[in-house]
Amino acid sequence: MADLTYEDLVSILVEKFAVQPELIRPGITFGDLEIDSLFLVELLLVVEREVQAAIPDDAISAQDTLERAVDIVREQVTAAGTR
Figure 1: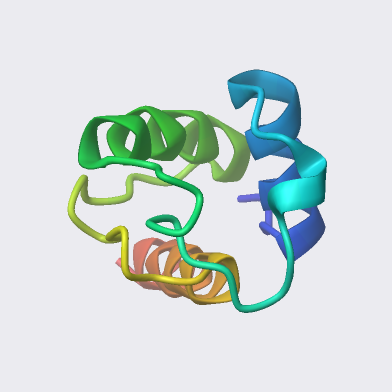
Figure 2: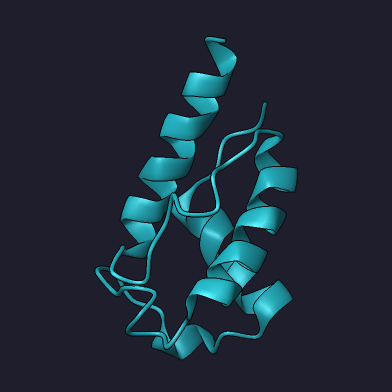
């Protein structure tokens, strides 16, 4: 299983979802970026492929920061590795 870093998540947002890099800063939430729940599901599908682990569709919400999202993904990867 692969690990996800903050930089990886930013790259995915910029390269695959065309989020403007100048909008991304520490502490910003997905809601601040005007990312809705459907977008988050699509993002999680991409992240799942990157980390090779299943992540529940509702694991990340618009209120989460990018840093928190990385922590959540890491928790899910760790949990998947212990099953």
